[in-house]
Image 1 (cartoon, rainbow, N blue to C red):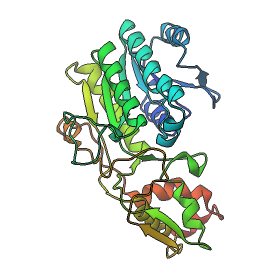
Image 2: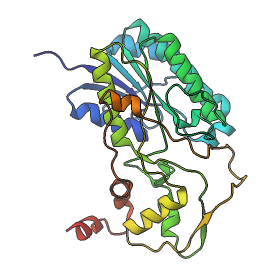
Image 3: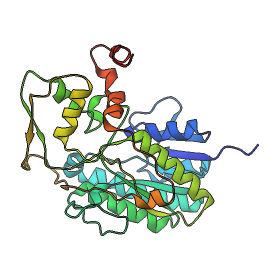
Image 4: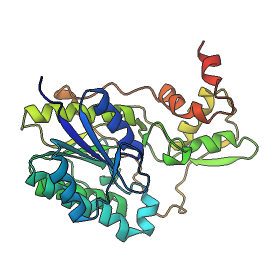
Length: 312
């Protein structure tokens, strides 16, 4: 029997990294996951901003595929702590790409729809990026480093993500649960920016399919887009969450003009055209938002048995 192919997942303690780790594991791959601040059993502690540590890791484990999920992905944090974010999003990617090329590993770099300015959607892979914030610029630089140093690299741009969370604040989508539950006081939510909330389990499945195909077919390389199809503002997401849990939503107030409070500018509509993946039959049918977000949030309901009572 041939040995299982091996994959290294950076940021395996994070929102997307956990889903990617599980997806490859359940598909029979040999998976190595790295974390830094939140290291778990079965995961390796590695500071991927340390070039020597990255080199040592790759030389020791010799993964065939590297899925690079580790990033500072909170735009307002990047705006305030730019140097640390650029070190992680750009320089660490550059190091990984060089070392991946040296050990002939396939590199899959996770990027973002925020490389676009949101003025002329939908965006195909060849459309010109024009990021509005430092986060988008840092991820675009990361893409360029990945493709420059590792010519067979894959870049997967994805929109706002949600999935199984350790705390609801881990995703911009699940954090809306706090607003939904605060029915005692009115709460305004953005109703301008069009988003495409996407389940990490779907992104993880696409990562695996891309990796499997690219190992067999070296023409599968470069930039790909994956996104769920449901277009929603934060206000609409919150209302959908309230309805899913049979909670009131009349305390949620749609805010129809941009607020200057956020540190980072965000694109109005950075919808991704995902036809390249679809043409190669590498996409997955995105999970419907309501059922997927219910999966993520039911553990945070006051009565954890809620799930059994509603679904039976």
